[in-house]
Length: 301
Ligand code: R5P
Image 1 (cartoon, rainbow, N blue to C red):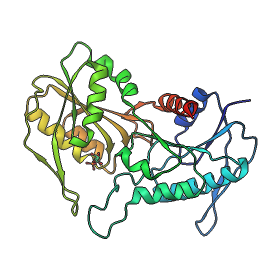
Image 2: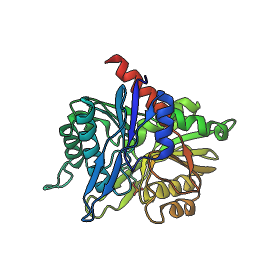
Image 3: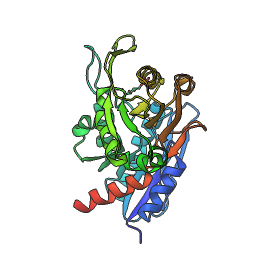
């Protein structure tokens, strides 16, 4: 009898679900899910759910629909099994609205987490949350899985034998750059970015980073419009970088983001398999890291 049963929502990437189930030694039980003619979502769990139920859902694209499906699925699994399912969210949508930047705004990520808890969600596992401390409102507890190991494995080959610098495109990503640099035996540094909260426009403050002739690996949690990565690459080339590549945990690549990044001279783009990805992005599998973090955390109780 398996220790876990993986129950995926329709938003979850297939390779992630299969990788996770295989690493956990778990069966996959597919729920029934559909939309009613009026657009409302329907789910039903059927079949044998042995051991700890693990609900996996992808929350991008169609964040709002996938979120409702997640809540319904968690409630259904909770009632069907009599247990609080572990919830695996490779990409936590709404994570960037983690405070009231302007008066009158909601703290969206708290609303999402509280709804998940009210639906019967158990321990929550996410990949590279924008700011992990925002998850502390979720009382069943959470694990934030850092993907640096998986990125290091994939990038090591091109960094070997070269002067490499891992750069965070803003201070918020400094910890990510530091972790990857440590695993690659490289230096790390950061740029200073300011975002206009009303227009969303990104500006960089002057800061010298020692990158002359080096391979620069830009690392961030999310690529959305690609503006951050593109501007950071331009600055690094203007400071003498030899070549720039980019790695991100959640590659949303809205509109012409990838093209913008390529135009700025970013040679290769690596992204974790937390959301659907365009074809010319190098996919980094993080499902095994998630399985390991989940089992270690549940063993500790
Ligand atoms: C923001 O703080 C995030 O870490 C990313 O830097 C940001 O979401 C990237 O957005 P964009 O690709 O639109 O510049």
